[in-house]
Image 1 (cartoon, rainbow, N blue to C red):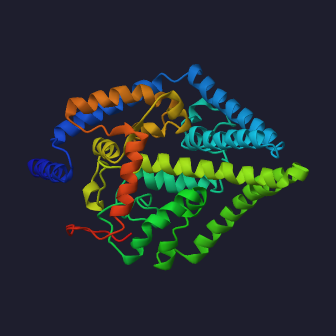
Image 2: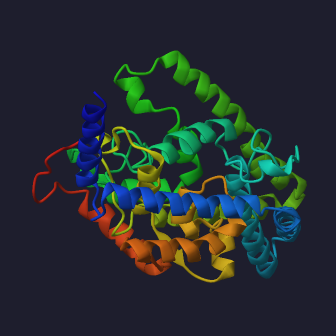
Length: 378
């Protein structure tokens, strides 16, 4: 009986290995996973006051930028003041959403035991409620990364970003749909967890969706009043310049967040998977899938901070609860481990990653040139 069980395990491992788009034995995958886990443990065990000072300093910097930006907008009738105020507010919103909000809500700073910088308490400057985003992103996306039909971030329910998604004539409008998603990105993020397509199929109750929409509505009301009513009214005669500045700052944040996120998930060389590819998946194979299903953006320290360190998307997918200021350190070792096992390390400048993303958006708006063996409706 024992021999039979061992044989079954070996057959399962061999079958799983054949589905991987890399030439590694199951033993090598396990060794790779052990090295990645050891790297994670070493960095997480070394967290301390220097890291805590980093996030507190980043929060303080973001708040000063927001105060300065809003203050300059109150003198917005003067073009230099309006441009400077709008730019500062846009940068403040990017920092809050990406380097602070996204990472705090991931639980990267929970180890500090600071109730003000904790995943259970942080509410970010976004129309999407943080608790709904935690479910759609922390759980659905990071657990099922790039598994078509399970990870709803593959196309966000409206785009075709994998050849394994069934083509429909509606995708012919994908270039326009993609542009609209980029422009209104925070709104797309807010509605993502409602899963309208599942409601229409009867897989999710209207009552559940309505409860989520009411929760979103409360957050939307708060954000709209803050940016489009309260601060413009406080500006008195400069109501319209301040309103325009707030709209523009939100647009800057939306476009930047969209570009960084799409460059980390959909450029050339990023793999996607089918549900059968992850049957009986263990931690080592999960690590490998995270690596193959992500891409990095090359750049300097400012680029990394402004991207929320999602320029290290591979490291973020490998270690989603690791503080983002440690990703650059981890990246050096992850790259070396990839070289050791002959694994791809997809890292290119922003313009190259984004160019390939836009090319994919255009290409996948059309049917596949050759039929795939397996397709998933999405």
